[in-house]
Image 1 (cartoon, helix red, strand yellow):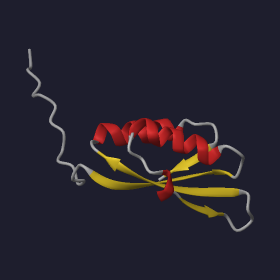
Image 2 (tube, one colour):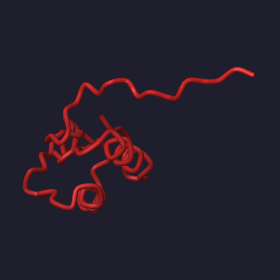
Image 3 (cartoon, helix red, strand yellow):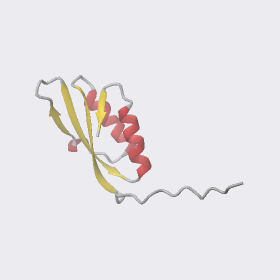
Image 4 (cartoon, rainbow, N blue to C red):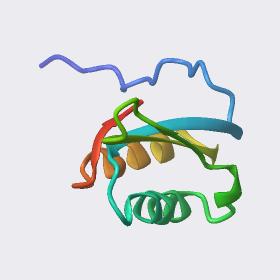
Length: 94
């Protein structure tokens, strides 16, 4: 029987807590910014929607939304990325 060593997380390149920008892209539709803001508030109760940056695509079909959240852990970032990525209005999360 072989004993496995305990799983050790590699050191993070991010020092928590920190302000962390997340770029979300999707079709420019009514309610998209509100939906993304709602998700951000679930993971960062102090999220300030006034910090949202919007950038429309050249043709106006897509909208880029940059959220800056207060990141407190790798788990929090993983969960917000997962939640945003699975939202039906979202095409890409960077």
